[in-house]
Every structure is written in structure tokens, then in C-alpha cells.
Image (cartoon, rainbow, N blue to C red; front, side):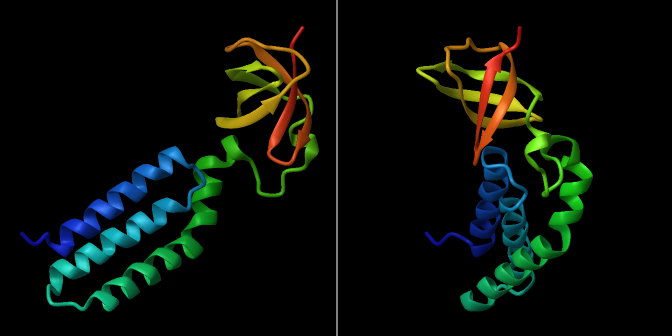
Length: 146
């Protein structure tokens, strides 16, 4: 039983678009759209060679990524993720909520709609409001709010 390339491209596109919800960043979704565009081309030209399908997938994925990502990110995520040029001042003193309890100094917080790895000098329970006191690369140092 042969599986149609149309179905394969559609499923690949669906998986990539769903992965965007797991790994946010507004990148993977464009590859999912590229796969769906490849599926459309294969449905129009069923005898298309695989290398041509891959070329269509690559060109449309990278093209939409380059042309649309910045605009869509500003429009839909500017309040959540902020500008790409965020400085330390955009974090320090801000309030967040503990998403995964801070135990043995490590856990996760929810800040501006994004889950961050966090660390603290003391254990903090899930759901507690915290203040960000430092940023170390991709980890935020927090303290409980008084």
C-alpha cells in the first residue's frame, strides 16, 4: 500500500504546526506552511519529482520565514515576548508566577506568557507570585513577593 505524497506533506505540515505550540518561537510554523504548500503543488502536479517537492518546501518555508516572521511576531507577540532587543531592565523588578515549584533552587516561572527556567535561594510553591531579581542567560533569578 503506497501512501500518497499529498498525505505525507499534509501530515508533516500538521505535525510542524502543532510543534509550534510546544516549542514557541514562531519559526516551526513556517516550515509547516511550506509542507502544506508542497502538498498543494503535489496535488496539482502528481508526477512531480521528490527533489522538486523538497525545493518547493524549502523555498516557501524559508521565504515565508524571512518575509513574515518579524511582522507577525510584532503583531501577535509583542506584549508577550517583547522586542528582540530586550535589556536586563525589561526583567528586573518584574512580577511572574511560579509555574513549577522551586525546589532545591530550581523550577519554572511564567513571565509575559512564556515559561522560563528559574532559580531562587529558597523553595517557593507553585502559583506563588515572585519578583525577578536577576537574569543569567536564559534563567531568571527570583524571590518571593512580600
